[in-house]
Length: 120
Image (cartoon, rainbow, N blue to C red; front, side, top):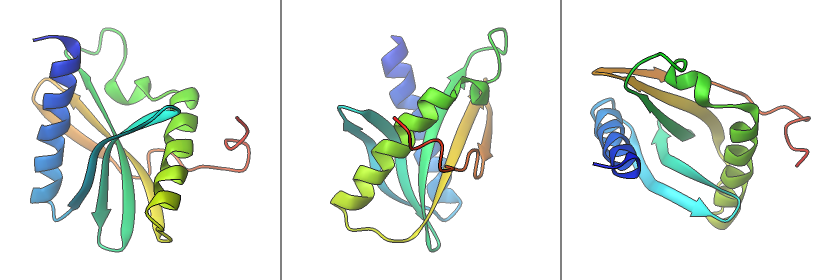
């Protein structure tokens, strides 16, 4: 199985995990030229944009460490467009789903946009 297929499988695993936690999955792999959001979900009243990161080992760092500032900017820009296209005005959160071996960790509010992050 190639890296992309493994990524898709892990995203499905996380979507199922989130459903079990009461989330409603709104979109998987929302893609635009400016970026991609792995999972868009609803958690009570919040819209949650979730980046899924998988690592076989922590040799190159933990999965959550792979969500760089540049990746955060792309996620935020893509999320803003998603919200405009779907006419969403709700509380928004950016979570990271970190998967290593068989361990799943959901980092709620892994990053919060500030006024400087919108400078593309």
